[in-house]
Amino acid sequence: MATFKTRAQFVADDLRKRILGGEFKGGTQLRQDALAKDYDVSRIPVREALLTLESEGLVEFYAHRGAFTTELSVSKIRELFELRTLLETYVLRHAITRLSDADLKKAEEILRKYDEALNSGGEIDNWSEYNYAFHLALYEPAELPETLSLISQLNTKSDRYIRMQLLYTQEIEKAEREHHKLLDLARQGDADKACDLLKTHIQEACEGIVELLEERARRAEKT
Image (cartoon, rainbow, N blue to C red; front, side):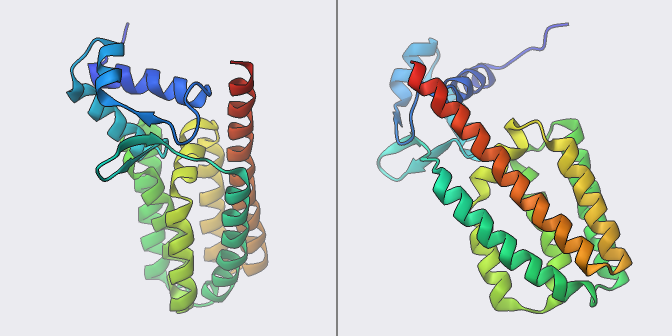
């Protein structure tokens, strides 16, 4: 049975393929009037489509300038995720011995909602928010506010990449398994194994995104 798509969904799906396929390089302006003409629709579904792609990290809006494809830098990704690895394992190690039953229950409830959103394919806009909320629930008991502030900044800067990793690298089930295992290790108080898993979890997410971008670059070279 065919799935019905709204005009905005059709435009978003096609634009996504064109962006990831390398047709639109980073920093390319996406003019709504031109796209509306291209897809033979009004500007309204085009804007809705662009907002969808913004939530996925593929498009950025600038005041008085409009929508542009995002600049996706491999070197920047590696630096952000390496810093995340250093700081987040540091905080987790301090937090594990302080995790209360209430803290663990909070993390478990966030993970349950996260799983539901991922499995249903819905609430895509919230996937990365659930991801960060789950990790933060495990980190907060460390009571290291300055480090948590830095982690928050790093997650904000890497949000578009995290969205891409969840949406396009086909690693959702693996990410879910790792989150559940991380929660189990935190519950057991095993700081060494938990930090090793967290390090692998962040680094492999990074490599998944890098692979995606390198494939996109190869496609762009062929066009």
